[in-house]
Length: 449
Picture 1 (cartoon, rainbow, N blue to C red):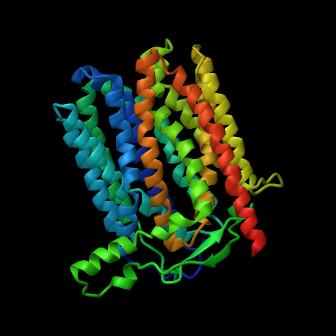
Picture 2 (cartoon, one colour):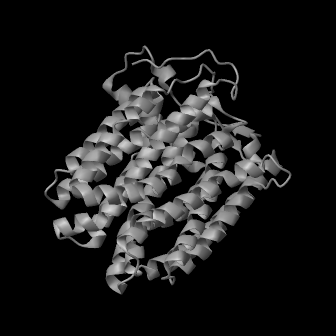
């Protein structure tokens, strides 16, 4: 299927870009909502399979981690396939099929293969392409566009937590997963709306771009990069099997891994995502073990989502006032807020206090994730954006796939999640240090230009 091209000449001016924002909003709502739903279903699946909490919890983490580990594979497909719509549609089919098959599984292995592997790969194929299309439509308004698009992530936390609990009480965990598969199928409609604009973007002369403090405004500083093949390069060529393999690996853009700013930015975000992956899976379980009822614990994702939404829009809204802060300052603020909140959450047992602290955790993560999205957008050219995000996801997935396992094991060893939350607080302090090093390297490279 060839991708359609619209007659667009300038970014931020084509109204279809806001249609893409809406499609991205819905797709992210579904993919991250599925992750939250797995967390709510955790104890029910554990009882059905008579397994340990950490094993079933790790399946939910693997669903997210495998989608991250597939990053370079998706990056290569993004460059070699001429239509991102096809990639997203295939991802939606795989994601839907994985949950439907998982609902009929009789062993933990079958559940892992269907949910973690099949749906995880589907999530990867239907996730990264949206960022590339959004970046093609927006530059000055990218901060607002990405904030609106990714605000569906916390909204899914708000909706999927109570909704999954209701479905679980009504249909059981198997019926709930079958419904999840049907909802995931709607990603195909979102993929159909991904019409790339007819804007020339550098593919044969890709360039890295340094991020100034006011990156949200779209100012770039570029240095020369390496030639990377794209779908345009290969269109109409009859390549040998060896040539196809070489092109596949070349299109993964391994040169990204040599960029110092990329290394420290990725390392800092690994710490943030490590804590997020463990917390989002065991959030409800932690509330129950702290003395909350199942209904009260299912509301914790709601307060987390509310805080996440507030954090997502803080920077875009203040950028249009006299109180504008550099992007990196927002990162520091979000990390400090999360570190303090994780530590506080470890010892809180009262339901109202847990709700408030969980809201602060969501707010901190929303601030950091929004700032990270803006920084990455201007770290490189639009054509290489998907590759950068995919490599970040691979490296992050390798590290964060153990977050659910380690958190579950800490519970098995200590009988609570307090140790894990204290660990999260310390990791966030390390992330602050890594962000600081990234900022110093960025300023040094800017001074040399």
